[in-house]
Image (cartoon, rainbow, N blue to C red; front, side, top):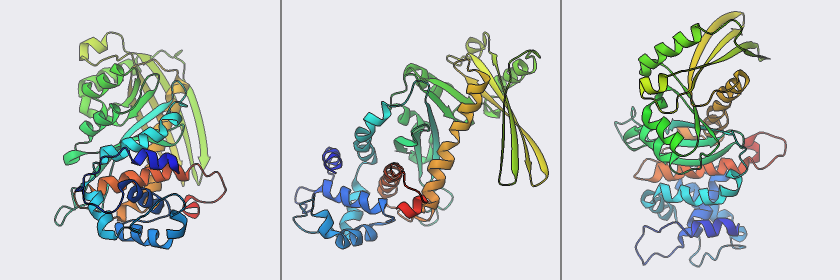
Length: 345
């Protein structure tokens, strides 16, 4: 617990000098409350009062447990980047455990309940970098004006990419993004769709010319009344990096997925821009790893932490509490005991 106290002491206090409650202690109580299922500031304060005896084992709490108004004021004023950076310092040793070639998925998630009156169509959004192998959030940034691309670039600037493969959906298939990844020593495997029409057209042409002798990888899965066969192929993109001014483009990957769900069949073809010529098996594994950010992070935030139902909406409040949820999920995953995540919380 002292590691958390030390980390939170590095977060700048935005309040006036005559405050009564220590900022690090406020953050500790809030984090533990969120870890146990608290969703808003009144529940954080109630948690603190209920666990006062336990908290005093490692906190001074000179003026007792802060009120819900104090928690609300702190989170409205606190810089979310500084809060996430404090957690980042704690996870630095875990990040070092990422093997070379480890996948870092980039994606945004709307906080569906975080909007002011009349703004339901434009809730706040958080963009995260997620280490799929460790199931660990590396960094999280609030998307200003819901600009996911700029927030993703900011997230990339906060983490070490050397030797890692960065994945993203077609929104992130742009020159600024891939240039930032390559500049930090990383590789990319990013979905390619109609927003890069000319590049997509050349990718399809390259894949269609693939020799019948081209190495193809195949995986088959069956579960819950659904079967899926995925075929992966990788071809070189000779000369196309310079032609399209697309930094470090070396290859295209294609995945054909055939699914049968309750007797109904469907086929989907996905194309990827690659900075490194992966093997077909590596392509399939990397593309599948990307979905961890949806299944292991975003889905759990909604199911176990009820993030979509959260109504924190003032100033920096939604972003700061979203950071706490993601880091609480990281800690909860350390528990290897049997049972659902909700039971563990």
